[in-house]
Length: 195
Image 1 (tube, rainbow, N blue to C red):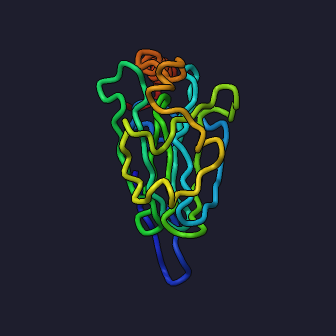
Image 2 (cartoon, one colour):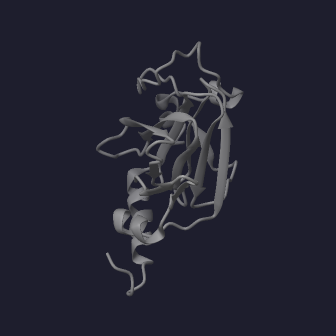
Image 3 (cartoon, rainbow, N blue to C red):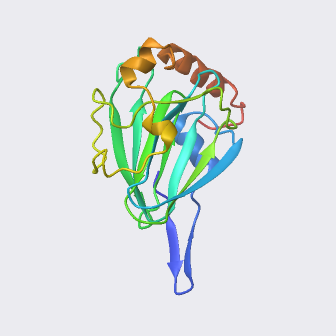
């Protein structure tokens, strides 16, 4: 999602999230349970994080300062795109945002010092239901633009299992559970909501 920006000599104004436009784009409302903000120095890599489904944790992510390479990974077992990833640069020129539905993995690397990322989350943080996959997993082959030696990782992310190990441990969400969750959210839309 790329917002329309209104600028004048005083500065800039934009609506970085609009519920009605979001619902038109994805087919269901976004329930806000928590808002997070992280500030990262250059080469800090956070992720790949995901949550158990149900309920999962959807995220709406944007960069408020600096630049990050934001990566979305399909971790849903049984999905036709399982193990595939996409990357988009989030920065302060376009001020675009990325939506990650339940079951998708998320990570980013800071391309500048003081890169500030804001996340709207559909569920509150639950450490028991939160998991990670190693960002430099050889099966995923994500091009972060930096090497593992250059990346600054948390101890938790550095010790994260590979995609294969996470699959063997039964940590990854099932595609059908994610589809069922999405269908349930779409059914919650009221009759007055436009599609």
